[in-house]
Length: 470
Image: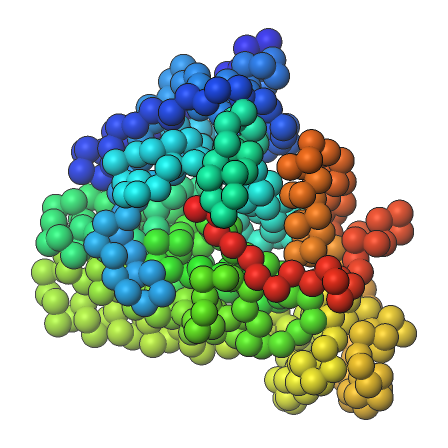
């Protein structure tokens, strides 16, 4: 059977100012290590022979109908503006429109140098590829908007990072790869025709009911509010919330030094490059607002009545903190098994989180087991949980335990398990990778045979820092 991908490449039909034509750079010995048949079916892709798919998803063979490009964008990186970034190690093969009618990008990440690579080699090593594969698919199973993984392939080549490492390529799928930074580059250059064309394209693709640039801003804001609240609800820390990593579709994108918290603390940081804690767990809502302000600044540039546009954009962005707080409270109310808002809920949530932070309670296991003895076991001082439990029991609704089970995952891709999986794969053993994939596809289901994957890390297994891999 021949691999068939039904391409329909709308972005590549835009003027060349938005991208550079770029084919993937072939690799020495491609080997397919994962292929997502469920996602392929959603995209209308017909799988081919394993050898052919290895050639395509490693970048050695450009499939029929593809129109590969590297996209241009800019971005604020840790608050500092970089006027030109772009796909330095990725190529957008093209887009598909699946049987569900949805348009999706298909991108190869780690596919070699592009005009935007600067001093980089354009490659990825196996660890970050498998991390993104596992974590992005776990996020999808958790019900959180995200890019997804279609395939992963080894390249048979060595990538030099802190040491020689095995190379790999990830086939990534997204609603699009349009970022806040995509708008920033044209606004900063004063290229109003391109900015307007990009805005019209984004509206048509993602927010067809939006009324002009400010309607787009409002739509992106609301999507980001929903996304960030969901991140907070599962203890997810993106790690690099630069504007070039902020998708206007409201999907989680660019899984670099990302991580899920083990023991809860609001200031938790894993990313090795986030030395000042800018993107710490508790800072993520504020950073999302900051990113939306940068999008607003860009979109305003094309408006004929600049003063009115500034006023409207300010109103849209200034409403975001309250919207985030409301979404956060709704998320955590459900995590407590509460479906109807009542006065005092915010205090009940805050009280639990404070006690968790003081007692190094595991975030996932505490919420999953609320109302059961196992939650008490997460606290250094179980009495701290007992005192809170009395308040919760007075507030709890009849179906609280059912709501808790449906809202709080039993399984997340824990950092130490991901690192163990990567090391095993580097040694040629993909069984831990396959096991994680199998378990994480059903995160809200109790799976007694895999209970070890629910355990927090032992002291010797704690992952202190995560890395981009670029």
